[in-house]
Image (cartoon, rainbow, N blue to C red; front, side, top):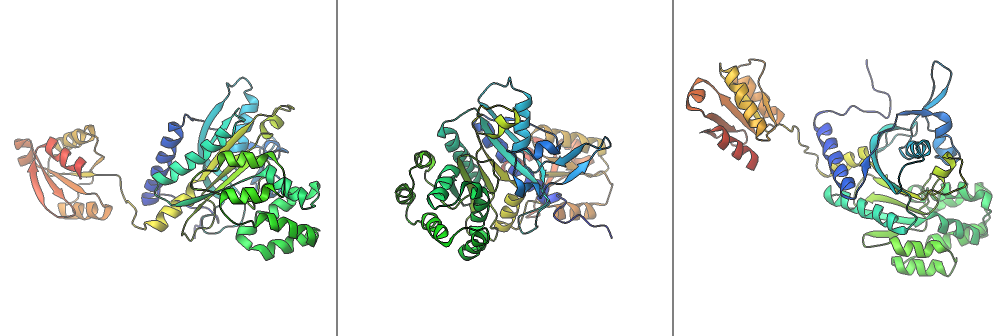
Length: 418
């Protein structure tokens, strides 16, 4: 019996239509903010994917590795950020700021659950060459606009890796343990406080340090109140940076860590409200060191971006509205011994901007109408000798069953206005 590999799926019919609508929305919003498309290979050299400032040890465990016939070590990309940084490193004469978006498949050999696959689409938007927090704010604005257009209520959580480092230091946690502690903190939302405390203890973090750490991570109040409380515990520039980017609809969460080690400043994650899907639907942050590492340069290349999970967004929209649109076709032309005339009518409808299909199989009218109904096509257009003589068509509304003898232009207006 033929089966798909675990963590993969076919996308067709209703799902494919939904996917294209989401992609179209994303492209519209990205373009609206001045971003241009970029495409990179699915396969990268493994040394690129495993670079010091790539995803870190945790993500490398999930890389699909392969070797080509020349015995070169390769890997499937696990995100779109690392390939973009490699692209910039290979094209040092690019004009900055460089604003790009990319929509493509990525691969991770990780655990499978609702909303998480091993082959999935990411939709990234990044700006390189802007140090100002205005770029970080723009990412949050883009995220808000995307989900408003998709009519998905979300909460955007934001933090700063510099602040989290300062909190760890003030709690008495050694610098060489910072990355591993952040990975554990990142599990707080999923596994709860007790499980995280136990894991920190297993990593050799003292009870006193854990207590101090959680007193900062669990501050309560409004965004401003939480920042004020933390500013009394640590003195760091990241607090003023957070004040710049936090706006309406954004929640400051000092425990937000983001698992990838290349983040250097602002980090953010977007979660659905009132949903069974607990995975982030979008996430990103600032990564000022990675591109310089690819260039073997001591200079920083300030960069910030956000990635939208297309597959998990699809799942969210299906959860919200299980009745998906089954076709993009608006009219189905049925020839009655008038194939040439029917083809001409179909062409006229297409010129009017109407997605039009036509019966090519020669089935009887009953079977054809049954097909049109099952496909969810709203209008059937009959073209026979009588209609050709009168320069009209018989238009049937498939919902009501009512028929009208009208001109092609009138039929087009009715279909377009429905």
